[in-house]
Amino acid sequence: MNIVVCIKQVPETTEVRINPETNTLMREGVKSIINPFDMYAIEEAIRLKEKFGGKVSVVTMGPPQAEAALREAISMGADEGFLVCGREFAGSDTWATSYTLAGAIKKIGGFDLIICGKQASDGDTAQVGPGISTHLNIPQVTYVKKIEEAGDKTMKVERMLEEGYEIIETPLPALLTVVKEINEPRIPSLRGLMKAKSAKVTTFTQKELQLDPQQIGLCGSPTQVVKIFTPTPRVGGQMLKGEIPDIAKQLVDLVKDEVN
Image (tube, rainbow, N blue to C red):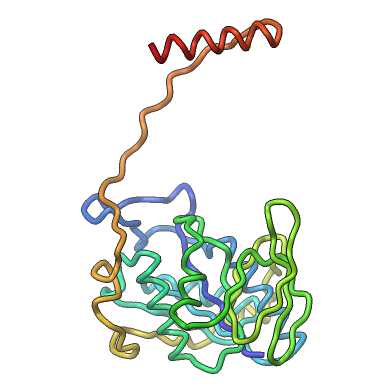
């Protein structure tokens, strides 16, 4: 089973900075980590490879420093890494990002399954995975918490719901987005770390991918951030005391005063 895992290198929470001119995240020179949800995607792909054979390819889009994320994935057990890099891709929203990653996956070719984390910690949109499946015209199952069965042509998974779960069978190739309940990511072995250090990471630029220039980067992003600001701190409220009926009456009176 040949699996492609899409990952994203994100800034650590305390290191988030915004470019005041473009209103986009500043990634270069910022301490970054693999998006936490993507760690579960990497682990699940490696487990499937260990069970069924095949290979795990990991792909990400970002600046040159994102290569470190690919090497970390290789140290866990992935076989190869692909970096989509170039100024043409800068400022991509979820639509342009999914279009670009889909183009990179087509370039890699020969996949049976694509796995993504359910969402990124910096954007929290959960749109890129489904977007990739749309551009590739393959089925998708989101919020997967367990892979029940996997065959040559179909896969049966548990999809997490707010209250319970549902069992879904999908034809392959397909795309899954996974949640943290699916597994516990492994710690890289010394052998894995040594392999990752010397592994070759393939870089895809716009020259190699030949994507539509009108659908990548800021130019191909239908949504753009117009303004970023820090919300005004909330003023402290007041504590209502007494029995529940008394508190309810006080609350109603306060709301009426606010309205009037």
